Length: 286
Image 1 (cartoon, rainbow, N blue to C red):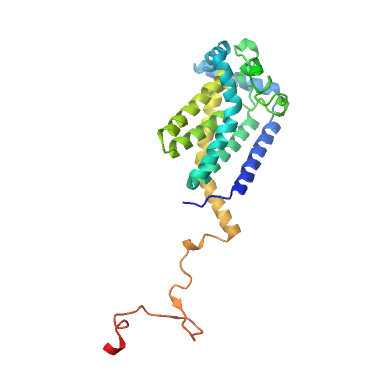
Image 2 (image 1 turned 180 degrees about the vertical axis):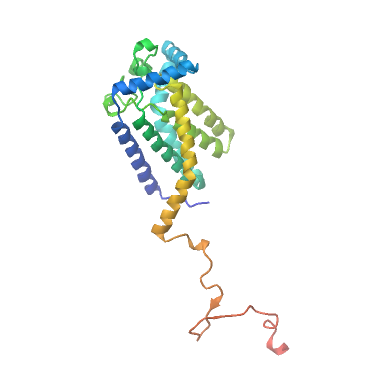
């Protein structure tokens, strides 16, 4: 089992990656017309393929506040709570799996940031009301801590990128959490939660009109790409660490002496032959 990495180093690394991701989201803002065009294009594709599942879910969440309000809380809160909790759980209980899992999550997040940059997308809730969507975050904002303009804390909506919708990293992170819970949970409960959490997240992001169904599909695809890239990236990082910190550990190398030893009074080591049965015979018996 690998040694658990240093806590302070991991905290700094994760904080730095998340800060870069958050700043990147803000810098990746596209203009409204382009984002609306992308959103409508996605909606037309879904309508053609009969995949516009977000419409009936959004109507249900809008007309039944007992579903809509908890869904808004889940959308605005769970990814901030569950993802770090699973990371900490892996760090403490599964150190051998932690490094690869952490690398997978970070790679997928950075790939998602590329998607936000290349494809700014207007979410369904910001489309013209004539398209049939209701912004549940705005409608039920009085019940929660978020503002009417975004899922950010009230008053901080201008500090978030509302067009960072494709892919849905809410779904991507939830899928990562689900895989970790399913694979490394020791009891049935973590596995049940691991299966339920991604599915619940897909329903929530569509029912609150924050994402299209294809955004959710793209979020899963991003996690798949991150998973495929994790082994080569880990190997590259290991090679870099070997160069910086002096190569592989001593246990991976043969003994330096390799049988060459010195005795008292010897200046130059000589290779000694392996002892024979005669060598073990007491002198009195020879």
